[in-house]
Amino acid sequence: MNTNSAGAQLNLVLASPRGFCAGVDRAITIVEKALEMYGAPIYVQHEIVHNKHVVQRLRNEGAVFVENIDEIPEGSHAIFSAHGVSPEVRKRADKRKLQVLDATCPLVTKVHREAQLYAQKEHTIILIGHHNHVEVKGTVGEAPEHIFVVGTVEEVSDLKIPDEKKVGYITQTTLSLDDTAEIITALKER
Image 1 (cartoon, one colour):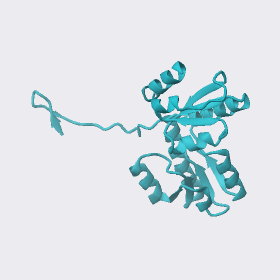
Image 2 (cartoon, rainbow, N blue to C red; image 1 turned 60 degrees about the horizontal axis):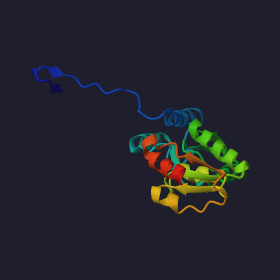
Image 3 (cartoon, rainbow, N blue to C red; image 1 turned 180 degrees about the horizontal axis):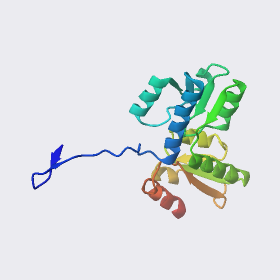
Image 4 (tube, rainbow, N blue to C red; image 1 turned 45 degrees about the horizontal axis):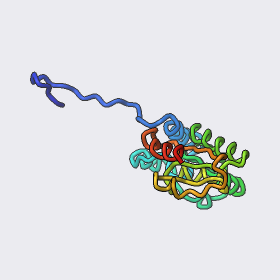
């Protein structure tokens, strides 16, 4: 309880929405519904959200978070996180006969499709993002022979592009316009 300048008491009310983007909110709901429908354990490829409280709550309810799809027992229920996965991970899940629920954010799926389209046109794809981020790894997996990841303006000048007339760029969805603006400007100038 706080007081204002007149000395009156004020109540602080916390908003109930989680404050996550729609893709993450959707992924959390998918894990919750899977636990309700199938019971524990439900295996999740990568932590569903970068929020230790949500992850711990889901662990307490029976979610098991793994980094490698091969850690999941064959035939188990598995969920791909909002960050998405590469086609290689999808193939390994299929080979392991996992019962997959795909919680990939629709925006991530859109970026994956753009990567596929650029690759079909034989374009070099510049992926603006963090090199080791799980979303970036999944996106690179869509067209690994065509994608270069760039995380800084300095990396733009180091790029070795076969045909600078056939270039497209995509971005990690968790980055804001402000996060990518300088790199996009450097790409366009180059």
